[in-house]
Amino acid sequence: MIRNSSEHVHDVVVVGAGAAGVGVAVTLGHAGVEDLVVIERHTVGSSFAAWPAETRFITPSYATNSIGMLDINSIAMGTSPAYSLEVEHPTGEDYAKYLRAVAHFFEVPVRTNTNVLQVAQEGDGFRIDTDDEALYAKHVIWAAGEFQYPRLSGFPGSDLCRHTATIPSYDDLDGDEIIIIGGYESGIDAAYHLAYCDKRVRVFDIDCPWESESSDPSIALSPFTLERIHERPFVERVELHGNSAIECVTCTDGGYEVAVEGGQRFRTPVPPLLASGFEGSHRLVAELFEQRDDGYLLLSEDDESTMTPGIFLCGPAVRHNNHVFCFIFKYRQRFAVVAKAIATSLGLPADALEEYRKWGMYLDDLSCCGEGCVC
Ligand SMILES: Cc1cc2nc3c(=O)[nH]c(=O)nc-3n(C[C@H](O)[C@H](O)[C@H](O)COP(=O)(O)OP(=O)(O)OC[C@H]3O[C@@H](n4cnc5c(N)ncnc54)[C@H](O)[C@@H]3O)c2cc1C
Image (cartoon, rainbow, N blue to C red; front, side, top):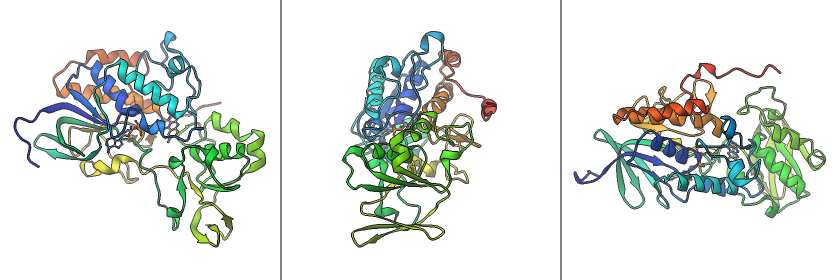
């Protein structure tokens, strides 16, 4: 496709109106960028709205803004999910409401129900092919997230399982005995709700996340989850199998058999649940980035492609060395870094972004990361 010279070239196109896309769009507004559009395949916050109904944020919200500390789940200065939702651990639907309110308040220009098919470099900018037209931009921010791109592979028979990202409510799940593959936050969350629905649950994990001694919540379970593990229904109905890699899942007469490395086999009448994480959407733009050995995208110190200047990554797939930015309170600190780089390239001063430092929303020196808790 060749661009018609009369075609408008946006300063920035953001792909995805989740926490990352809305958050970075607000920040671009503060940096003085006016010609931007956010392209969203569904509606603002649609991944959150699709969480299982019972799932709640593990990170607690609290209205700490009056003392200059941003609510840990906030994506924009001066806003607080605790304040607007009046809950400490929002559901996905609650949080989608918060995102819609932020997008509305800051007048973020979102084009909904528009799916981005691919992004390609064209001239000194980018062509963004959507399902109804091509858009053009000097800069692209990829913020299409992970939730809508679950990891469905990993062992033979994984296609027989059902990913937790496809479950509207644990209350509606058939079967009295459920096997869950994956024992990090999503797997333990599923086990907890199923135990409260009177199901017997077995959780298998290749490691043993519930015994991790790390103080990094990207590795160890959150206190919210650890507390729930000790509740009576969980203790009585959930078996945790650590250091148990799954060899395969097969169909048997009237059900499924899960083979664990080492020889143990378990049967279940209903499809095992996969809580094995997400492939992530970043593979859709992987051609425009160098890759790290672990498959994540290699990023400059501004979260820009090292290979194709002008395209940036925002959200939970951001990695720098061994730093994992998978939580909102982590990746929101990079919005200002990206906005500053884009504003500078557009010749805008972006002085207003200095305010972000006061709110712990501007992490451009990663040397502070990595310190654990001493007690
Ligand atoms: C079950 C669960 C619980 C979590 N709990 C917490 C928590 O308690 N605290 C915390 O900090 N983090 C939590 N996280 C991690 C993280 O905050 C979420 O993954 C968050 O959704 C990431 O936001 P995002 O904007 O990157 O992605 P998303 O919310 O998925 O937003 C991406 C948006 O892009 C759109 N999109 C995708 N592909 C396209 C395309 N091709 N074209 C156009 N639009 C597209 C989607 O519709 C979506 O609206 C949790 C994650 C999960 C899955």
